[in-house]
Length: 110
Image (cartoon, rainbow, N blue to C red):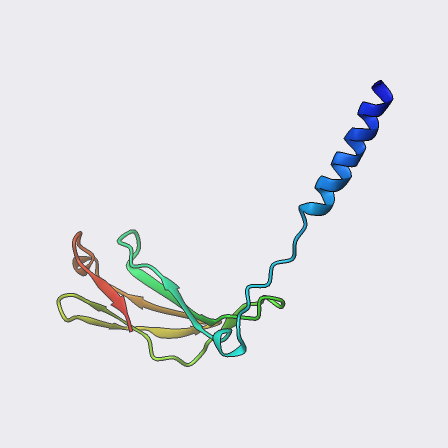
């Protein structure tokens, strides 16, 4: 009886191990694979703000693809514009005076 339980356990483990691995293909088309990625946040902890611009890479060959030479600026809800400088490697920075970084202010990247 004990021997049958061990054999049954090995069979169950073998079936579970095989059934848990299934390949996943997200079905991303070539034209959908090249998108801009813009990331950053405006914070009052430092007056220097940074935005990063890059491109997506293929899912089977992930890598960082920075975008250089963009015209990037931050706009606030009061009509102020803060042009950003290209620091290389996809990073763009600007300094925003703390007087503009008040609670309730809205910002956007263009």
